[in-house]
Image (cartoon, rainbow, N blue to C red; front, side, top):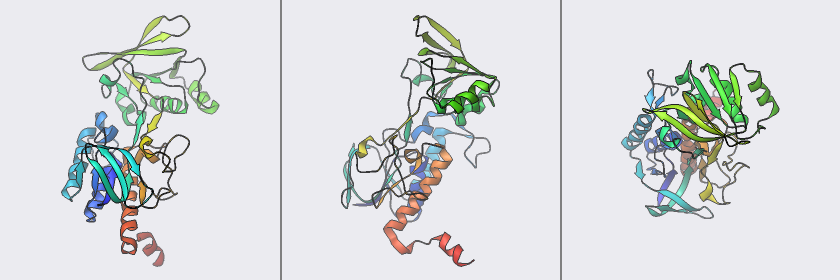
Length: 319
């Protein structure tokens, strides 16, 4: 039986692995179906502290993995399909591994950006197609970009991108937007934002590893047109990777894991959650890493009890 098992190898899971391995907790990390998480799909990361010239997403994840391995973390290739948290030890079944038993579990399975699933989209992720304006907006300074979506997140990202791009066009498949009125108003008042409504994306166009346009279909007539662009930002929501949990772990209405405020504790003692799987607001590598640290300390405190030093209590006593 393992002392602690971490599910997922994005910034949250790898940070938890580093902390637990340094504490001699011998963590076992199940890599998941996308080792390294969403950062492996990005190119250059410029907003992770400590890298003055930026760092490639896959390289950052590989560095974090090696750091965890240096302290003794064990990685296993596979993904959990079933979990039983009803009794101790916790039991999980993982494709490629088999059954796993653990005293504690850290859930860091992330949230996957929803894609359009049209030709040319996946092939051009990191080459002009992005799912994160905060991550990649800087690379489109002075250029033309498209935002696909009609919700609050699409409006927010469109406004954010106007800080860099000369023109931002919102493309939505309906005449009406799902976004709240205040978010719509902010977007409509921004002179850098234009609109292509009632149009369905059909294909991402590219040349020599660079996005050049988006083919869309006008829903009323079926007529197709090509929208020339330097970049396409898909903002149609995220899907937390929590399907395998069933009804054991408390989730919110969107399927994200709910945790006790100020901690990473779930409704089941000994099961913790960190990263994007419990964060639908920030979804940044650095915030995920921060909650990974929290989960490691919470798990260590759970396993070791009073042996873990609580710095906040120590500081309060000295005041």
